Each structure stands twice: as structure tokens, then as C-alpha cells.
Image (cartoon, rainbow, N blue to C red):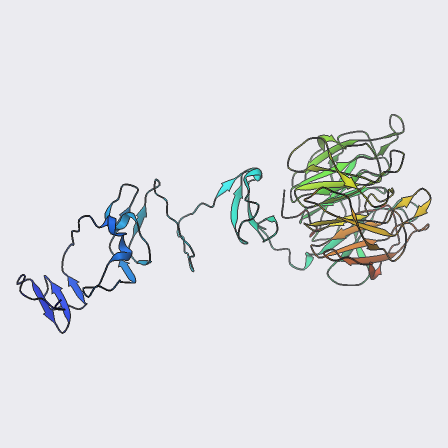
Length: 454
């Protein structure tokens, strides 16, 4: 077949291998002056099947004019494939679906919408970096390859990794709040004071606020800004009678407090779970009930679940139970600790995968044993290692890599701070010392495993 054919029309001009239609000075292999009307090209597959006059596939198609692509289009624009560069204005109607494999750079000058849905509609195994809007909580979230996390809307700077220890007994009840940087090693420093002296208090936190609830058979709830120092401020009150020995855990937005012991109107073990919205001041509200009422249990969270382990009714318990933080209802059985124990209300911490329960007491014996669970699955705890010393009522805090256990009673007040890498197993190691030796305090951090989830 001839590669060049001349004579069809005086409007066809070939110059130096360039073909012009409607022009005597073509600048491209095929240069057409004016519009092109093409019929029935849809069946050939769209833009990607444009061919050069010699029959080879054209690998790049360019659309430079204003183009409307909608679900009623036919012809080459109804199915676009291959590499397509659009330099003009392109409108895609709302009834059409556009699929893009990878986009290197995207600039939006007005607005765009990400996928949305409730918590239950999350994809369990999306690609890392997948982003969506959670309708249950009104926030953006992303998948980090293992878990869904909230997109932070602020920078915490040097405060990230800060643990606070408030109240306790030394031997009398105190108001002191101490601070520790979990990411480094060293001793605690003074931070501020709670609104009132109390021990056997529990704590929880968001990345911004630290919360202390109950203790010394009170119903007081205090809060502080974790990034700054100062005296605690009144948040509200617990939903039920005054109590101590309760245990708290939290997500990024909600704190839950379970169990405890009350002396009013009479001495009794409590099975109640109440909750607060950490970002909003006010009294706690009823959430549900523990699987079994008890006090001095440990509590951990991965942002989705709050899990309680151990405690005493009496008798001493090995029971582990849990709730879903975003909803309300009664706790469900999870499994059992390796050792039944009590006096460990603040001696548990977690990242967003594992929870660790440490120390405590079985009958009159002090324990150093550390157990761990995988929070997202039910089952019995597994041996992790041992604290550097056996003790009860130590205070724990964590980041997503490291857990700390500070102070406690052994049988006097301890100033020891231990640490362990949560993702591995093994015995705890020395971190530093508390400036004020104390036990039965409440501890929280701005980087624990409950943050970044709901």
C-alpha cells in the first residue's frame, strides 16, 4: 500500500511528510484546520485507538478544547483509556463514573469530597493512606496499614509523648501532678495540681486534655491541658455515687470509667460504666455495666474498644471484658489474665494493637508479672515479662511504641519508673525515678493507643 496518496482534493496538501487538510502549511503529521466529525468510533475502544496514518497505535492523545464527558456520551469520549492529557476545561457530569489508577499531582481550586460512611462500613484491609470521612464522629480518618486513625488538626510539638501522673498517696493524699517525657529517659518533673487531694483515682486523656475522675470516694472530675502546666479545672461529676478504685480508658473523643468501690450509701462494689465527651465539659452519663462488678481492675484501649482486666468483687478476678467505645451498652466477656489479681487500676497501658496489664496483688502477695492481649481479638492474656520490682497500684502511660509504669506501693511508696517496648516481649527496664514517690495515682498520656480511633 502506498504510504502517500495525493489527489483526493485540492484541500489535501502534503509537505515534507506532513499532511494538511484545509491548510497549505501543515505543522504536524496530520494538521486539520477546523472541526473533525467522526461516526461510529465507540466500538473501536475510544481515544486510545487513534492511529497514525501508517497504522501504528498512537500512545498519547491530547484533548485541548472544552470537552463534556457524561453518561450519555458516545464515540471516543465514552470510553477513555491509555495516557490522556487534558489541558482545557473538562466537565464530568454527576451521573458519570471516572476511575483513576494513580495521580501524581492533583490541585483543587474549589472543593472535593472524600468517600464517607459510618464506622461499621470501614474497609478492613484498604491500601495504606486511604482516607475517608467518618459520619459517626464527623472527622477525617486514614488507614496507616494496620488501623484507622483520626487526621490530627493541630501540631503538638514538643509535648507529644508526655505522660502526667496526678494525685496518689505519699502516705497522705496529695494534689501533685508530675510529668514525664515517655520518649526519653529520666526523672519526673512538677506539672501542677489537681483541684483536690485524692488517691485511688483514675485517669484518661485525648491528645489535648488529661482527665482525672473519682478517687478518695469522690465524684469529682478534673482536667488539664497536657501541653501546658498548671492547676486542674473542674470538668463535672461522675454519673453515680462517689467512688474510688475505678478504671478509665478513652478514644480520641470519649472517656469511659468502669467499676469501683463506694461507701455511700453503704460499702459496695460498683458495676457501672459511665462516659464523658472529653472535648466538652459536663457530668458523666450512664454507658452500661461491666460483665461483672469489681474494683481495682486495669483498663486499656485501642481507640475502638475499652478493655478491663482483673479486679476484685471479692473474690479476686482474672476476668477480662470489653465495650465498644463509640456505642453504649454492657461489657462482653473477652477472656482471662494469666494470673487473677487486684490493685492494678492504673497499671495497664496500650498502643493501638496491644494492651499490657502489670503488677498487682494476689491475696497478700505482690506481683511483678506483665500480661498482654491483642485488643482487636478476644482470648486469654499471654505472659509478657516482669516489672523490675513487684508492686501494686503503679501508674501507667504509653505511646504507640513504649509503655511506662511509675511508682506504686511495695509495700511503701515507690519512686521507680519502668518501661517496656509494647510490640515485643521481655522484662521491663529502668527508666528513671519519680520526683515524688507515690502510689494509687491516676496516669494518662497524649499519645496512648486509644488516640486516632473511635
